[in-house]
Length: 255
Image (cartoon, rainbow, N blue to C red; front, side):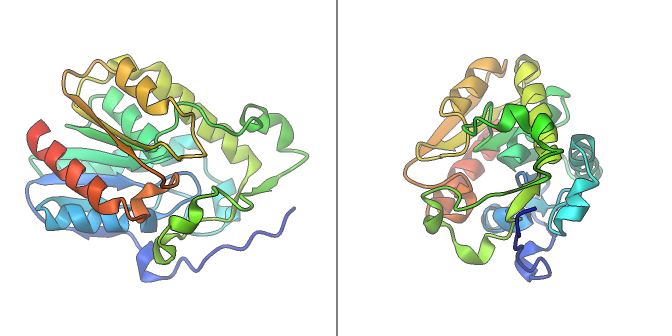
């Protein structure tokens, strides 16, 4: 097993948050092996724009790889569904904004008709890693995978908020693949307003992921935002203010 060093998840940036604002609440979801720290700047920006914002750590995340090994895709989707239901009890409108895998979970719950509007950020409809389809076969031989050097543009990330695992249990990549496939297979069931955001420089997901989402959904209200020269976790880059501004305007007009 490769030696994988993880950050200190006890830091304030990695703690779940609920910022009460208006009667339109937005649930923020991080991605595979990430933490709520990746969503904190977007959450603060949307709160300043008048929204109630909640950010959660998905099960098995922001702990250690042993904790992640004990979770499956149903746990991640279930936690998002529960958080969404909690916001729904106290707010007139509830929307979602998800990064990467969190974007796929956002689409899955939109397919169930559970969210008033959906924003996907770097949501994969496929991935550029050619080994992903073989994760199930590789898991017994290579139980843990290191992210290694990561995206060549990762130096553009705001380090304070880049708190996620340095790798992942190989078996969990099978769960990630299931989420991607399920989200993609049922895109036509999405009828709520959808904003999709992606960077042209994203070296992690399929280059056409945004186009697949937008062409597959049945929503009458949909919009896109293409970013330039920022990595996959674009929510903690110099483009964050642009993401926040676009998301806030979209949510105000869509609901």
